[in-house]
Amino acid sequence: MSSSPRISLAGYLGTVRYTGPVEGTSGTWLGVEWDDHARGKHDGVKDGRRYFTCRIQNSASFIRPSPNVSYGQSFLEALTSKYIETPHGSASQESVILGSSQGSIVVEAVNLDKIRGKLADLGKLREVSLVNLDVATGDADGLIQETCPSKLYLKNICHVHHSVPDIRGLDLSKSLIPDWGVVALITRELPLLKRLCLNSNRLLPAKNFTDMESAFANLTELQLNNTMMSWSEMQNATAKMRNLEIIEFGYNSLTRLKTGDDVLPVNKTVRVLNLDSNTCFDWVHIWESICHYTSLQRLLLASNAINSVPSPGPQQGLPALKHLSLLDNKIQAWSDIDALSSWCPALEGLTLRGNPLTAQIRHSRPFTISKLPTLMILDGGEITYRERIDSEILYLDSVVSETVSENERIKAHPQWLNLCKKHGRPDFTTKANPVQDKLSQHLIALDLYQSLSLTASDYQEVMESQTPLVLRVLPTMTLRALRRKTCKTFKVKANVLLWILQTGGALAELRMEHDDRTLAWLGLDEGSKVILCIMEA
Image (cartoon, rainbow, N blue to C red; front, side, top):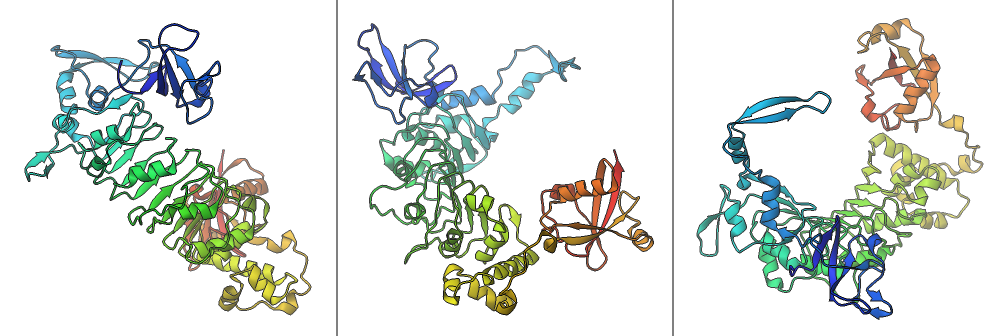
């Protein structure tokens, strides 16, 4: 049996935790912790006796050794099986089926082996995917470089030029590789490697970390999603990757990251960190765990459990961070958004959808924009100059209507004074008895003109000869909803082409690719002139 502790059986991957007898039975058993814990029945305990331990409870079972159990293959065996097609022999002609099963035809092809030979040049590979091919081991020293020669040459330690593979991206996800030592054995033969995917593996630490630095010398991107590694294991594995810029570490069931008071060395290369779909909830703890990434520009915390963002203390912050995803968390207070402005003073992009705050609070988008003065993109939508101005004025009007003292107002709304300086202080006397906020007060009037041309080339004549149909809508309405409302107004079931007359007389089409955008985002406001053409169904 192979010495590899990783196996594959009927499409399920697992790690062998025990080999030997089980009390009350005869013969040898394998105690396996399955990657898919739903296949497990226990956690290594059988009839009250513990045979092994598991990372995840109830993810293990005992199986018998059998020919159906695969212990994997080497890197080169997997590479050649996928990228090299075996020649069919010396026959000059082969039958090839072209087309689908309903309309397929059989043609005679000549010298396909010659074509296969040209395509079997492993030295030309730049992106390699060996997902689910049961890669378990490396190969003899130098054999990968010998098998995958390219036209690129590097100097070795003896200053002798030698050919190296041109592989820049490698995906070894869902493999049977047991530890980081095997990964290093493969990657040290690929000195040009920049992107490495190891998702859905179960990797033990390397026994010898001295080889790690040379094995990942040029690596810039590393994916470790669903590896069930701890934060400290990830830190140890990446410590020797001197050029690493992007780390993906999602789906690892992490509630806490760092443990203890260990201070990690400063890292100035990592720019992107993805912690998507873990269960982290403590914002300050997250910061304490990642603050050594001093050049971090993009942080993805989507689908975690963050419920609050307290104000930062002295020396706390992410000064280089430009993009933050808090999609599908539990943020529910405006004070959390105010705090983000202090934590991330250079923040340009924020994803906030799927939080209680955005689902329940009215005006969540304009208020978020007003509270984060550096923000340029919110929930994937660009913040235009006009939208920022309108949002900040709406926010000022809302704040001034609160019946609190000025000191309380300043404390509750950190951007209050800055926005007053920018737009002028709202008139308190006119806001003392606020008028009831009615839906009609927010409607804008659009002037609609109907064209018979699919390109609206006759728009000038149309506007001179027609009295516009005035349509009152909310600026938050989407372009898709406007198309439907237009059809309803004209009592037709058809597609509608729309154009807006811009300042200066130019005509701009409102394309269907922008149907999810709001009218305000598209620049439609009170009195905008819209040309439409109905395409009968």
